[in-house]
Amino acid sequence: MNSPMTASAENGGLRPDVLRARRIVVKVGSSSLTTAVGGLDSDRVDALVDVLARTRSGGTEIVLVSSGAIAAGLAPLGLSERPQDLAGQQAAACVGQGLLVARYTASFARYGLRVGQVLLTADDIGRRAQYRNAYRALAKVLSMGAVPVVNENDTVATSEIRFGDNDRLAALVSHLVRADLLVLLSDIDGLYDGDPRRPGARRLTDVHGQQDLANVELGGAGSGVGTGGMKTKVEAARIATGAGVPVVLTAARHAADALAGRPTGTLFHRTGDRNSDHLLWLEHASSPRGTVQLTADAVRELVQGRGALPATGVTRVAGQFVAGDPVELLDEEGRVVARGLASLAFQELSLLRGRSGREVVHQDDLVLLPASARAAGLPAQLRRQVSVRVLPAREFAARDAGGPGI
Image (cartoon, rainbow, N blue to C red; front, side, top):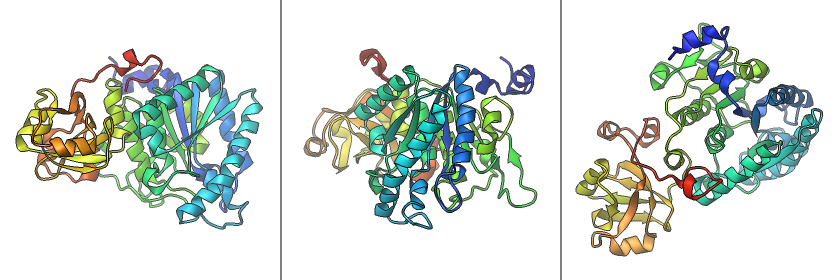
């Protein structure tokens, strides 16, 4: 197998992962579509669509994850800045979403391409049935030759079920549609090892894993009209590459170069593979509905993969979940050791804990954190950065024809 450098040289310096991609998720941020005071910038939208339409004409499928609904609604509502309250954001999104999709519809129509709007909440991705339905809808839109334009459903999303930013949404969508590549377009032309406005800051051309980020300073939120920042983009890249999807991060003005495989921005190389779609969903997209605390013996059995987890190993249950909901499994010290799908509802498990051999979580429905991460006592926000060790997964796709393998 060729090294990335050799393979790139053979293609005249182009990126092989990009050249091979037949289905690409492209995410664009609010600041790349709107004016400084809010409102859509038609020239910017048309410039992006020009690039996407050319890529689409070459036979590559495009899924566009677009921010901008709230920002597009600011000017029409007479707002000078993004509202801080949820109701204000919902109102702006209500006005702006129609303007955003109408503008995309008109712009893509110049190339004879249809647009299909897909609005998602975290609940749609976090629950398995909705996840499958979202996959079917997106797959059908693509098969009919339209371009899906995906956005978070800001109008109805509550603070509890928000993605938080469209970078994470794009990473989850790239997993959902089994994309070959994720392109994150921003107002920054890549990942720098420090503030790019400071002299001496160096842009990283390639990131092969967490080790390449050890000395990188990540800033906070980006523009005043968006919610993302470099942290959210790196986290999105981590989710996507862990699912076997390489990521290009660059400025929107370099979109043509990025989609042509030219070495622009930063390329995050895949760190995982496409296997265990069900468990990748469980690890990165599901939203835990409760916690189940285990005895030391139960944790040991869990780590060693010795079959189903019985209720005899449960000491405490918290939350309000039903059978099939994701739950986090804790050790005696309250540290998360795994995530799984509950086989029993909260009320039933509360009655049976410590006294029954009934199955709590099936071994095929578990994703387990490495023992090294637990032993190191990593805080919860860092545990998601560690590559997971997974137990065998059922092939859900085989029994649910047409849906993703979850």
